[in-house]
Length: 304
Image (cartoon, rainbow, N blue to C red; front, top):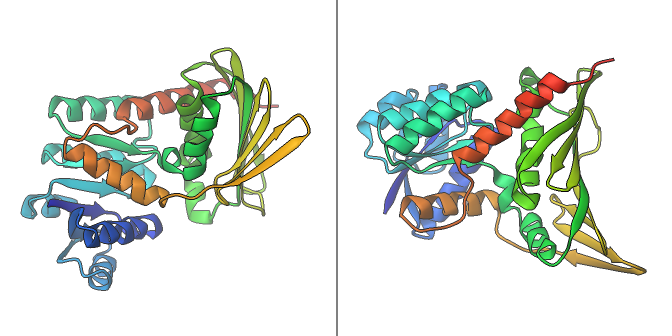
């Protein structure tokens, strides 16, 4: 059985632990160690989830444990460093988005992992959302003309330390590429300060269609919607409620989507990849490209 370690035990890292334990109960993987710079936190999580070992140092964990893979859910500005350390110890890794603070660093990480033959997967979890999977099947029979992604919610204070583009917008940049093809051009971008955060409007050219990405960190209501307008229908996808509305002429169809928890499916896909199974997953090439698009957006940002 594959031996897994988890690095970073904040809110999202604890979800990694929970899901890994579920997969352990299913006989998919053995979670043998957790790591967090806050050692009492690492000890508490290890005790709660019956994980054999805990560490405050990722280097110590990688040195002492015979790991096949790690998942990395540390703060944004530490992701690439921890992933590079996993590379040094020849350990396959799933690293949360955005992977790195720049496309240059992400490229270096990609090249190092490839040179060592490691499975290196970015955590673009939205690809594993059941509603997005259902939308992709619908689009196989449609001709999209344009799309709008909306990702709105008030960000907590600790998240505002980081670029909203790296924190939130990157999800929908990746989805635009995943659903519609490569982004050919950043047509327009505006980052406007509102209260203590930003509102982002980003217009992308994808093939012959336009994609508008609307992100904010200030909305009191949480919105996670994708609208796709095709030649014959209007499609609205709610990735939180797992609902899809399709209007064709005067007919409105409502679909409730069922599926596996996205994080669980993501981790399972990563572990299959580590086993050598040919499954579709995002790659560090996808992370590099998303970061390149963000860097272009920052350059063309229109400020009044």
